[in-house]
Image (cartoon, rainbow, N blue to C red):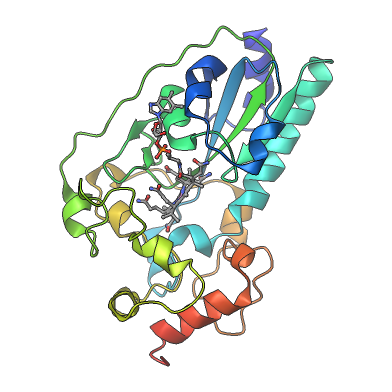
Length: 267
Ligand code: B12
C-alpha cells in the first residue's frame, strides 16, 4: 500500500515525506481547522513546494520572496487537492484531508519528522535540496502506511540568523514573541517607528527574509521548477497592485498599501 501511495504522489512531486499521525497529535495547533482532521487519522503526508528563483530576479524586489510568487495557499492547495483526489480514487472509503499554512499541523516540525530537512535556529525547515525557500503542505489520511517519525533534527546553529535579525527576534529571550519584522509588517494599525525605519532600510513592504538570506545552509540551492511560481513571479509590487491571488491578499488592500507608503518614504 505504501508503494502505491508513493507512486501516486510521485506523479506530481518528488518532494514529500511521511510521518505517523500519533507523533504529530500531541503538537496540534489550536485553530478552527483542527476539527477537519479525520477521526481515524493514521499518517501525515507532507509535501514541500520550493519557491526560490534566480538571485538576479530579486534585484528590484520590494516584498519578501514568498510574497513575490502567486499565493502559495492557492498553488500548494491546488497540487495537494490533485494528489488527494488521485489517492481517494485508489483508496475508496479512506480519508484524505489537506492543509497548508492555515493548518492545525505544526508544519515545520512535521516536515522535519518526515525526513524533509532540519529545523533552523530561525524556526524554519531547511531542506537539503532547496534550503528554507519552501512552503509546506500536508495530507492527513486514515491510511496506515507504517511510517514513523524520524525525530527532530536541528541545524548546526552557527548563530548567523540570530545575530543578523535586526530586531533580535531569534534570541533565546525573544523567540516566539511577536517582534519579528515579518509579523509586524502583517499587522493592521500603526507600525512603530523603529519598524518603519527598518522596512525602509531593507526596502521590504511585506514579510522579511533576512534570517533566510544570511543562512549558510541556503547557499547554492536548487531553484523551483513549479510553473505557477515562475510565470506568476512579480519582481516589484506597485501601489496599484491587484492583491487578488497574492500572499498578502488575506490582509486586505489597506495593509500592503500602508507598507508600500512606508518603503516609498511617503510616511
Ligand atoms: C504563525 C506563523 C508565522 C508567524 C510566527 C512565526 C513563528 N516563528 O512562530 C509569523 C507571521 C511571524 C511568521 C513569519 C514567517 N513565516 Co510563518 N507560519 C506561521 C504558521 C501559520 C504557524 C506557526 C506556529 O505558530 N506554530 C505553533 C508553534 C507553537 O509551533 P512550533 O513553532 O512548530 O513549535 C512546536 C513544535 O516544534 C512542537 N514539537 C516539538 N517536538 C515535536 C515533534 C513533532 C513530530 C511535531 C510534529 C511537533 C513537535 O512543539 C512546539 C510547541 O508546541 C506556520 C504554518 C503552520 N501551520 O505551521 C507558518 C510557516 C511556519 N511560516 C512560513 C513562512 C514561509 C514564514 C516566513 C519565512 C515568511 C516571510 N518571508 O516573512 C516568516 C519567517 C519568520 C520566522 N523566522 O519565523 C512557512 C515556513 C516554511 C519553512 N521553510 O519552514 C510555514 C510553515 C507556512 C507554510 N505552510 O509554508 N509565520
